[in-house]
Image (cartoon, one colour):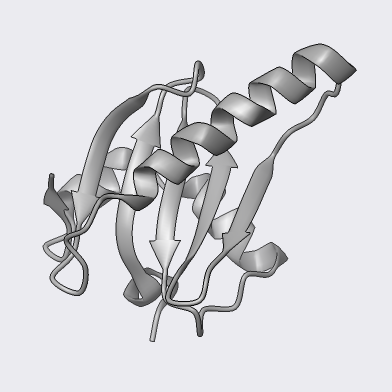
Length: 113
């Protein structure tokens, strides 16, 4: 299995934390998880301004059925909903940092929601 086989949903957010695009897969068409990511990005913004934190690169939200990973890229954030058996390690985070939204659009597993 490749890393992309563990993805069951994806979303792209602008640098202000506003959602731009959503992608679903046949395994899970539910997009309710995007609200959690939206809230996490809002919290990140609040913490960074209040505590003057720098260097946010990624966040992981662990759930019972799925986990989510949010990675900051140069022009946007990419959030992935992944199956729980996926290994969220440094190599996976680097892989997510390199994902382009066009790859999701062109992958036949993903459908624009």
